[in-house]
Length: 495
Image 1 (cartoon, rainbow, N blue to C red):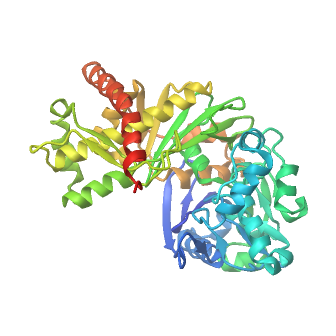
Image 2 (image 1 turned 90 degrees about the horizontal axis):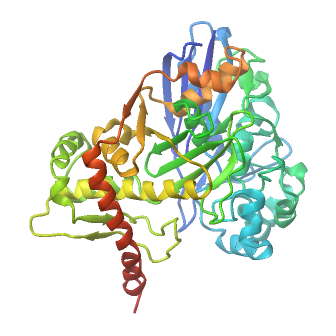
């Protein structure tokens, strides 16, 4: 028996064939464009998603496709696609990266109040959520709005194409800005504000629930038998949580990609008076989660590499040299807000700041400062979870940065937490595969699947001397933070 997990991302789709022991038997990938033809706009052709799913699944099929017991998905969230009664797209999907609906988001927030929106849906309307996209379409593309039978996201569009049933899971429904986070159903106020009825949204099913079997057309496209089970998927961050074993209360995941995302797991709703966390449902039954997108990430380090002439291939050597500079760089600080506003305080003037430069500062010092700045922002994010009552005992670190011992050592020392690095790659794909394996009865539930398939983990404990060093340096980083932000407010954009 085999199962297939598929990860549909913003830039590419990947598929993986696995067996009940979690062995990665084959992996395939297809990329597609993001259309940014106008400032602030970001759109995708939804047919590219489906074509990539079909092609990658065909590429990983076993010798006998009838041995595939099921397929499931990890998907990007927050993109919006209006389709007609036949499931045909009426326009390109508005990506979660699109900013055109800022005015609509502002009016929605004024209509209900940010705190009321957050209490009900776990987030406030933004240009990156479907509720704002739908209002934009009603105002600027009324014919498209009127013709739309459903307003879908990536996951439910693929389910519709494969099975004929428009179904979404709660982790992806949350990203629309229209899911009531306590009831798990569509929020009536949000739907009224968007001007739509519940019939124009997909049915909500649990992650891992059977959506249906492949239609004859979908089976032909994917190279699988008609009726092959399709199990409901999960938002990509929660797929990664499954794949790295963050499935029990108190577990956490630090996903280190272009941006870094911290996700915590709880067995109860996670309140946050600051509206900074995005709480919601975990894929595991009766579990909750919350995540926070850190404003700095690997993109910050990549920027430093570009400016200093270092290549990614030279990063291991740079890490080795930078590790010898820790004690002598106690007065070098990098506030890594290269991407703009800081989520923790929404400073609209926040920009990157290097403090403590001298004539002796070289590129390896800058690499270290960037790594430290990103880690310090992660520790600030951990404090948000603590304020919301979610205590993090250990960080499960995954992504490119998890391959660096220096990253793990700095993070462990600065946070005072053990850092666990699963040695199994492809967490999102494995999380998707776990949904199909559990649906196929290879495991009794997702928690068992995650525990059984996790594999080896490397754990880095805080080193006493380095922990003391970084406790002191982080305290100074925090003391300087407000002054750095005040400098941004007074200087950047001031005329």
